[in-house]
Length: 248
Image 1 (cartoon, rainbow, N blue to C red):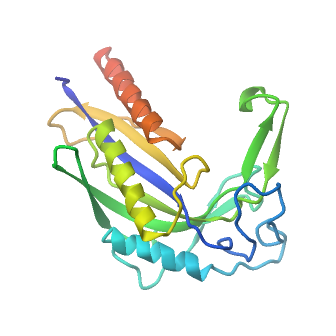
Image 2 (image 1 turned 30 degrees about the vertical axis):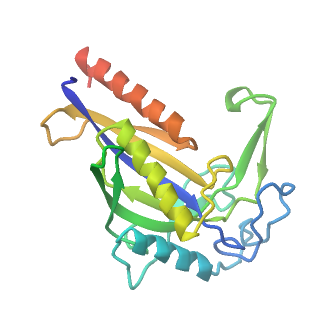
C-alpha cells in the first residue's frame, strides 16, 4: 500500500443541446462546412450587443437542481481575458463569483455498492471557443492553422467539483455516472467523440492522513474516460516518484 493518497478535482465542460448559440441567434450544427454559422455577435464585431439564450439558462438550472446546487436568484457574467485566435473578442464570457448554480453534491456508486460523495463547487454558464484546425501536422509541426467559428459561442455549463476524489478509478466512475445523469436530463448529447463533454482533472498527492494539498497538475480537455483514468494513474505515479526522490 502506498504512503500517499491522491487528491483529485475535476472540471467538466458540457455543451448544451440548444438550437442556437449562447449570445446570438446562430444555429448549432456539428459537422457543417466551416464558418457558415457566424454573425457579427459571435465574430465580435465592434458595437454588437449579446442577448443571453433563455433555453441555455433553463438547461443550466435543470443541471443545478439535479446536482442539489444552490440556485442564485441573481447571476452575472464576467470577461475571462486571454489572447488566442479561437476567441475573436480576446475574452471569454463566463461566470465566477456569482454563478447561476452554487454548491451542491453528486453521489456516485462503486461496483461494490459503496458511495463516492463529490462536492460540487459550482456549475456556471459560459461560451465555447471556436475550433482550431492545424494543417500539415500537429500543433508544434503544423504548416498553418485555420479557425472554424461555427463552434464559437456554443452554450456551455462548466461543472467544478471539490477535490474529493481519492483515486483515478473513483474519478472515472464519477464522470461516467455524471454523464448518464446529464443524458437522462436531456440537456446535452454528451458526445465524447464530438467534444460535447470534456473533462479537466487537477491531480496532486499527499501523505496518507495529511490534510494539506500538494503541487497539482492539470490534465486538460480529455474526451475519453479511459484515457483520462490512465492519465491520472500515470500522473499519480509520477508525483509519487518525484516525492520519493526528494522533490516537491
